[in-house]
Image (cartoon, rainbow, N blue to C red; front, side, top):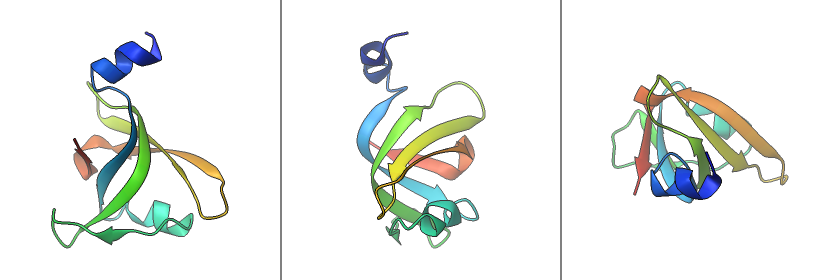
Length: 86
């Protein structure tokens, strides 16, 4: 499937805001990404400018983000702990 088709189907989204629930929201923090308070509740943190490389059927969501040191990370999170803001 092409990247364009994945974007149209909302399987892939670039530079989006995601809300990640605890305990998984610690991984971006450890990589040096600043998490903001989320309107999803105390157990969630909001992260800006994340790329959603894959979300859809299944149990996992693949996110990509850059740390403050400009290192790129790709992490797999359980989809039930990730809310993608559209």
